[in-house]
Length: 430
Image (cartoon, rainbow, N blue to C red; front, side, top):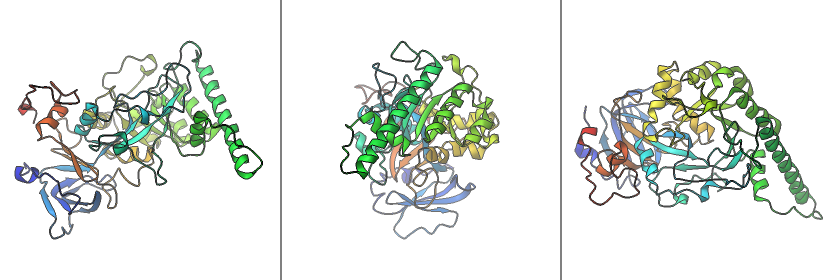
């Protein structure tokens, strides 16, 4: 059933002032079975209630969502949107670099991601280094600065991880490594340096007569990794590289999420025994990287069967954020369960970013990050109609400018609509 246009035309300007109830939808909460003819109640940026017997408060705004599907906002564990760069060519290990200092949040790519239903991103430096810098976790609201989008931890720190990589990406002329063995040796030595630096800091804190070491931003960042304050997001493809990443994490005791894992299907039991999670990219036309030649669409299914937590990512611009739902659909086609594939778009990614207490499911008390679809999320015919971040509408497919971001065409890649751009270009796209 088509949603009443008069109801959807609401400006949603008072969403934070009074409760809003989305009524009659099929709701996919992720942490439970889908609920038909259900209501989602949100207020003050939080989910208040979900179910088929929700009491709608007097005075609440009511939106007819019959014929629609509602599910949590999508979580992308690995993105490069915003044009940010981390480390440069001066060396292979640069943990002091912060992608926080290098993101253009006004880049049109972020609006395209909203059009794909994404609400939370882990934005990373590139993978041309063994360690290219600190990542940042952001919400895709309509802020104008990086601080408007940045997620902060309970103690006020900017939330993010650390980007590492192995394999062929970082193999270059010195000072970069030329072999896999040298790559691991360089990383190992730098973590040994960080352990020594941390010990000096601890001794200085416990002994007033001891002077602390000179401040070292790179070693400080690695100490945050050693102390569990930063998850390592590890770009790795080949089976032997996957095992090297696991070996390093176990040697130094840092938390790790394995990214891409093209050959994870060759070593699923080893990954499970290590107790690490995998963020998988699903590409329907593999190519361009020799070490990814054995990538299979069955990877998600193989890892699920082995008991390994799986999330999906876009690696945007490698795959398009607007088509992120397709990752789950292709994985299901290749044997992954529907339940785990939808979780891989939402709660599993939230867990990998250590944000699962806030996002990833439509659970009362969590942030009101959700999307409204006009069909089943795994159908090729389905469109994201609306995207909400903390209860605020950030993408509306019935808005011509938003529709432009969703379907491409002239102006879709610009930070503003070019003069003379025809916004009614896409009537057929709806």
